Image (cartoon, rainbow, N blue to C red; front, side, top):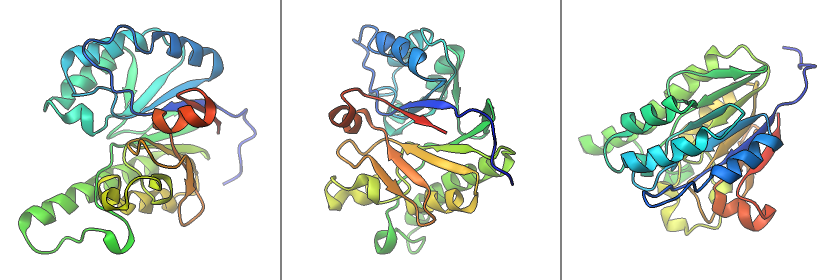
Length: 243
């Protein structure tokens, strides 16, 4: 497949917003700023603090202030109240494209995204062996990987971005305690990413004390865009990537 000659798309990415129910327009001003700095805004999970209806409604109002497309995925915090579908519905009604089962294309760039799951990396990766609950745990990680692969396979663009909450590699969680690495991501997410040449970047959140940049075994760039990682580096809670 030939490389595109189309202009690059400016993608602003941020993760781990953690909107609380007593927040007052927490991202209104920032989203307005981003609308002037980028062509697309990507949100990498933990959009709310507990997955409460009020939290999602507050964020939805701020999303309405965006004048550019908004895409993203949910994070583990968005599941805490057991109503992720409600959170998705509120954000969707505000104009956000919540990635999970279907990929999306904007100006020649494809976006495929899932929350991802736990599971670990390398020798620390949990195997589907033993008790049924362990097998179910691993199956959840594999299912997230399958969903990501299915989306990437449907894309016919020569440029795409994988949007996650959990990390697909160890590099970008370095800085966190090694004892919790298995709770911060799964290498199973990396397999579909490295299978498709059109993946030009991966963004994720979740690892608040991790490392900004790393690469998959096939060299795909991976960026930890948790706002707590970005602020000390760039003096702002988001980054703009050109794809």
